[in-house]
Image (tube, helix red, strand yellow):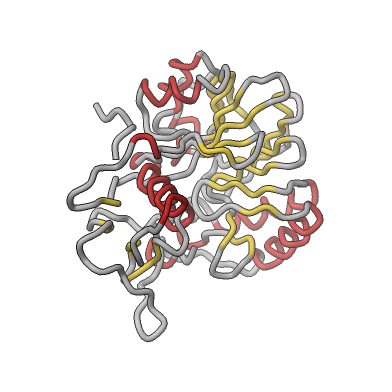
Length: 312
């Protein structure tokens, strides 16, 4: 069993503006890469997109860049960031990695969730909630639990449900999912129903948002944090909030309707998706961008699923 402690979808970029991989002989990305974007989020400037997958653009210089590259390598769900003669340094595994005092990025992304990001949310009592899950291992569970008792494992939708039950059982936590995706976690302890928001803990409200899947939801914490699953994300390409319309499994039209129903009710500063990049902006700015996304979404039409069309 993988102990989880060893060491995305976008179009091809060619032509004069294409990024170039680093020279041979140092760190590189092997051909198992699925172009999920996670490594590029964690090591910008060191890892970029070349010919439809991530590549090491240049070798790291100094401690800061070495740590960035190791963070990318330890998050990579295919363990594709490698060196021909050097192993990853366990002392440079940063996960769980603090984004601020309240939220940690779990890292160690799982191939069974298509490499999705997952998070630990600290509550005022000192307890934690896990939002979606990293790859499974007892060693990783112990590492997350060392940050504090985990009371709940919150699944945003079916694509990220693979390790939910194992983490919930190991951590003594309750597993949550929406009824629309219940078949992905039929033994969930708490089943969310309907389309209306529900406060599931003090300061934590779930908003059903069917579209990416029938049972997709958002978790909003303290009017600061939005854990959006795969419903929408921050795009570095457009520098805005976007939906991944080309991989909306259930219904892009339903996603547009869901956004129209709840967008004016959402308030948050941090956008924390499963796929795509993270961003922090003032709540008023986030609200404006979300309203604009909602308006754009009304014109979207169903189209065939195409992983290669996602531009992160």
